[in-house]
Length: 400
Image (cartoon, rainbow, N blue to C red; front, side):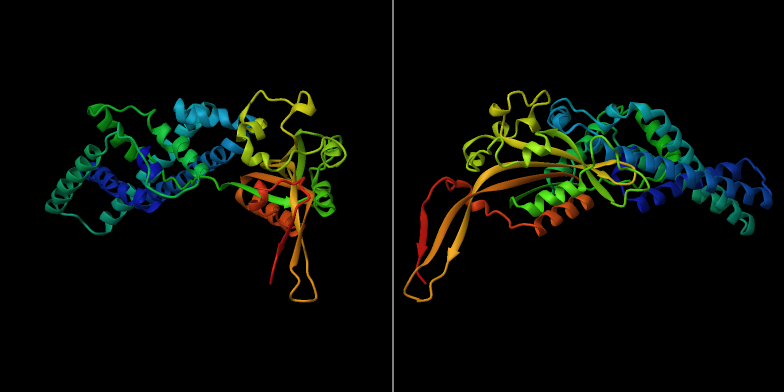
């Protein structure tokens, strides 16, 4: 399985050719004769089985990989990350419910491909007769290659990945889906491991699944009525679900946690903290709902501040594709006042205004779309102002 996870699709296909030639040699040496109509029928059968079960296998894997983080309760995400790095939690541990189906689809698809390639070589040999010397030379070459192939792979080898500047989420996915899963495989360098490598080459189907396009992003913007209206228009009513044919939107928002929308977007209730807390307090203090799986609102006056969490869903079937978290702060907005005479300075006035921090996590396409739509409706907050006191009445001046 390690080979099929780590290697490209084209190399997987090429690596099966020697094993197919080995199967053809067995048919040839035992003098098994198959008529052309039967060969064609078997080719159609094995081709159909290969396409069907390879598609089912890869679709199931891809779906499981994508849902591994999208279906999880976001407040439990940190616990899962801890389990991945500290307790070596793997994809195989979490997907025991589909393990038997995966093995069956994997074996049927791979065996069908091997049989298909054997029959193709056999059909070729029916038209172009092989003499004994050629088959002997072919047999020696195939045996030498297979011996090298099965011996060079040590199942106890620990895959460490390639050096890259990949984001942290991609590192998590690589460890969860590949590295930790490979550690679950039997690992002694013995006849058993060699036999399992040979069996995997014969039964292994072609895999083409990829790490899902999960994206994490943060956006700081000034709050305004356009943002509130945009969020309200996309939000599904809690009592009447709008999923279905009558819903014209591709994605919608569903309230998940935090303050109620009526409380969060009401400026007079639960005043937000100063944005300087981002540099004064730790992330666990500022965002406890992201780090503590047992966190609840409790006393709203003592919680981390004003925040609300939505699930981002497909409008047609309501499938979760991401999460959107909005946390409110009180930040500083700088306004310029120009003078008509050049000798007079330009005056910068600082005014306290509400700033929304959007935290996005989910499928990259929907997250990028939602982030861009938010950015179009308001002005971005300058992160350099985080350390400036929002409540101050100071004025900044500069000369031309």
